[in-house]
Length: 142
Image 1 (cartoon, rainbow, N blue to C red):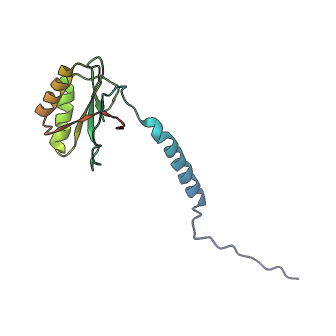
Image 2 (image 1 turned 45 degrees about the horizontal axis):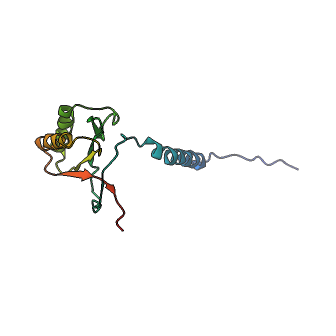
Image 3 (image 1 turned 60 degrees about the vertical axis):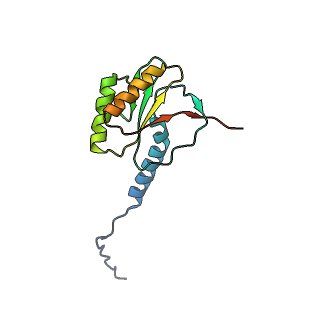
């Protein structure tokens, strides 16, 4: 019997299965780690019977005041780093000059002096915030 010579021709298709496997592993990793990336400052919010704010198209800027009267800005490079009032106003003003439609909210601890929240709101108004929302903790009405 004569042997037939089999010539192998190069395959012109790319096997994408390993790439799909890697993509799915990365997707799972991001899905697991994304909730862990949320950071914040512990603020004990006052309770109020108020309606929730409708969904916004833009991510809001939230300025927090803790019980000691320190100011924190979220989103920022380090949301757990306290900032001076002038720095908060400068950063908020910079964002509002670029995007005036960004909503600004204040989270004030219920133990902070009312004057600190008023000072903050005045500084935000001076920075260009036309309206400032107050964040409270929802109360279940009977």
